[in-house]
Image (cartoon, rainbow, N blue to C red; front, top):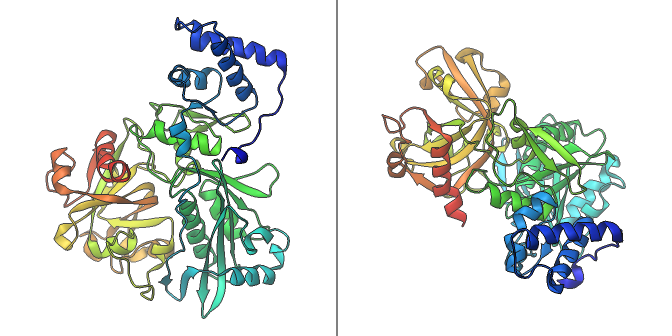
Amino acid sequence: MALRLPRLPSVDREQCEELAARIHQIVFADPGRSSAGSAQSLSDAAHIAHAALSRASAFITRDGTLLAASGTLLDQVGIDVISVDEIASLLPGEIGCAAPAARSGEGFSFGEASGAEIAAYVASMTELAGTAREFSRSPLHGMVRVAGAIRAANELLAIGVLLVSQDMQPIAKMLVHAREDQPDAGLFADYLIDRLTRDAAAAHPAAIELVHIPGQSSVNRIAQSRGFIRSRSGGVFQKIAIGRPLTTVNWAECTAEARRRTGFSLPGTMPETALESTEIPLVSPGGEALAYPASQLGDLLSPTVVIWPGASGVIVPIARVYADELLGTAPQHAFAFVEAKDAAFLARRAYASAPRNAQLMTVDAPILFYESSRTGGRGAVVAIARIVDRTLQPKAELSADDQRRLVVDDVDALSARDDILITTFDNLFALPMPVPLRYLKSIGAAGNANLISAVSLSSEKITQILTQGWLRGIG
């Protein structure tokens, strides 16, 4: 492990001595430590100053005094002080990248792609010449590769490849390419980008670079809508992927891990924010201070759902037959040869309900899905997502795009009126542990009719549900 750690570069001596004196004052002198002024304390301050000026990701120590001052040092000096146990959690291990499971859509299928298939596909596309070499050759030692492809009649229509280095601060490299002569190129690009982004962040927050390929309008458009930002050089799209919901309970832990694994720094505590006006500060690995509106943070850190303090969300009932396909929450996955509707392959999907729910469906708010026991379901919250949009439409005039994002063939039964409410959502997560109705009732989250209809929820209650179904389920 030590041999894989980079060495610190030389820094300006005068600048280092000045910062060391400041650090000594913060850590030892101001708190009145008995060790203040000792050779050890001066040495510790000098080492931390050198690490800070070198923009090291963190300073690793077992010293309790230094660890106790970690928060102050991070805020005032910009250096993260972490323990040996914390660094152990960053060591290479299971990345969460497994061979993709096969599944079928209407007229196409998705499954694992061999190295030979990827190499042949890359060689057949002139626009990939020179840009995709590292994705098509055998992965180097210490590199994990996941490769999948969309096929029709044994012909590859699109590919997605993810490369993750087994380092403590890896950058996940991604290639997605879809044949633009296919009418479903956008659908394929959507599915592959979402799937590989989730693979990259399955175990830990990740920094991702997606290769920019001129002419790939579907891939490039969808990447930007998913929070990827074009690099200054223009060669790649970049993003941070958190890979889990963010609440007041896990914010500090997730942002600390994101900082240590990606180099990007977010506030140590979750901002008390009004989404329309508040800007969230973010510091890049190079020290550049950035700021983004809180309403954009969900896209920048996606996949995630941000449960902002004081904001409300909604819990809605869904029949099991629809939940299995729309949410992908079936306890047993469908056979690979069973065709799923297009909605099951889109990152942005739609939920149809009665128009009376319109006021509860707030854009950017969380939406929780309760699988109704009345339809043979588990009587539990099984998934959470983020609301993107809501529109009230005549049943007879549903757009082709809305129909594609639904798994309901006939919306007539969902509303007695001629109109239907279409709520579009993204950043979908199935809960590791479904949260049963009895718990929802115990915290007052089931409404007056045990979730026969949609119920508004406070951020505190949503956090409680996630603590039961996600945070407790993985920890």
